[in-house]
Length: 304
Image (cartoon, rainbow, N blue to C red; front, top):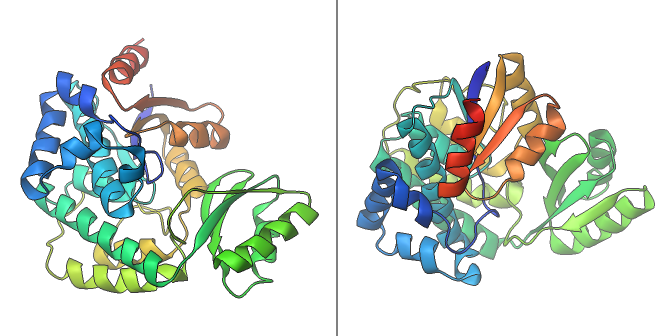
């Protein structure tokens, strides 16, 4: 095995019951949820027994997914797996920063709750939609976005997959242009135009929030969505920028591979990141860790 990267899941991967079995076998995971419940009562109950509809509300989604992300990473660490690098997809970046010591545990959860509220409010004030574009080059998608005043490329996921966000009416017209160009656009079930200028007001609120939250030095390289490079310098400004800027995930995975990472553990609900990693780096080993079963499977597979 070469170097190891922990990658943390983002919003959209949530599902009812997530995190419960992890807490059943990992004291470290259970501790994550206990802290969340002390700061935001009912967080565990939302994860373990909340409905899909309840979990899809941004102000609930983000703290809940964050807890599963961090619980999975803590369970891996407890079992003796320690990463050389970390990165998180969108919301997952907050969990990565907490795992890496930039946020203290209480501060990380406080920040993710503020982030969730700010982004939900921005989505209500500036309605937006998102769609994944397939079968076209990034350059072609960027050119098509340029034909509209309020459509932007926002998630550079992997080769052949770029997510765009924008005004719902303009996005519908954009999708027709994609079809004309020979591509396919799949609307995403999200509540706003995340990682676009539609999130400008959320970024402003988070800048204010970070004035009250101390940031520590990372204990390992943590790659930023906005730059695809490790966090350094003004980390707060970079984290605020992330909310309204594209997620450069493909570049991040390529940068990690260039630094020797060949084994990736996706910490958190779902297996989306494992799929994106395998499409970006064909030789990479990618293991999902979201519950007791996948934790044990990942541990066994990584030790053979």
